[in-house]
Length: 256
Ligand code: FES
Image 1: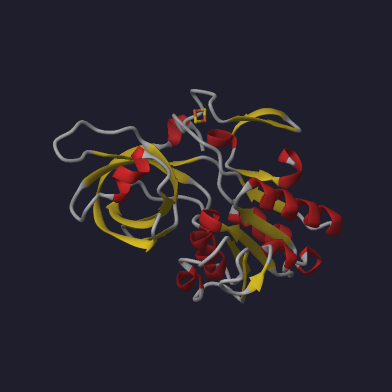
Image 2: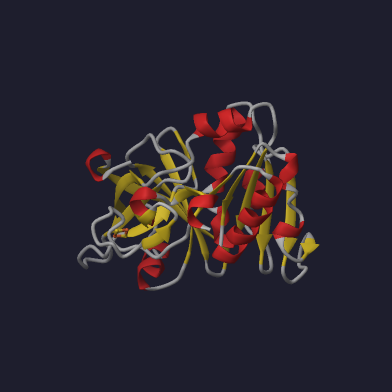
């Protein structure tokens, strides 16, 4: 998806919920439609008579007709202000941006074999819409989720996942240890992952050893979100790439 093809539209906050002390699920009405799983929007809001604050890139968590959900972690002043928005506040959504999970390619690569979706922490956010779309395509994936401590947001995955395997570092729920302990890539036609870099590297290494194709969605701090500021550039096997424009979804072999 390039700069020319993205749109911006006014939207309005429908509601906001705390799933954990620093995790917020924001539901909005409106915004440009047609996002692929893994794509993101720039969210810009006005608050309390102040001017608009800097846009924040937030991946699409879920969508249905006219409604979009965003699940994000409060990390700084911008996300703190997004978290404070109440029902009725206007919001501008620019997007959908970036390259997401191309479902026809994913389904073709998987063939008649199952699909695994792997998420770590807030990296589970874009995976709900991915699971929803895979389920709608007749390919409900197995969902592997890892958290440091108490998990959040898993109930929403239940209707769309074949099975869910859970791991926590603390042992608060599920397997005590890493989510990658639970993943056997040889059982799958393709593995799709989003989460912290150490987890993605471990997923990519296991997939490489098993000969299983793997796509990873990178989490990288972004400013413009449009490929203009070069602030999110990474080195890849194919040269420098902007995570916001060329990703955030890449073939694992291109980036690890
Ligand atoms: S955030 Fe500006 S180029 Fe990616």
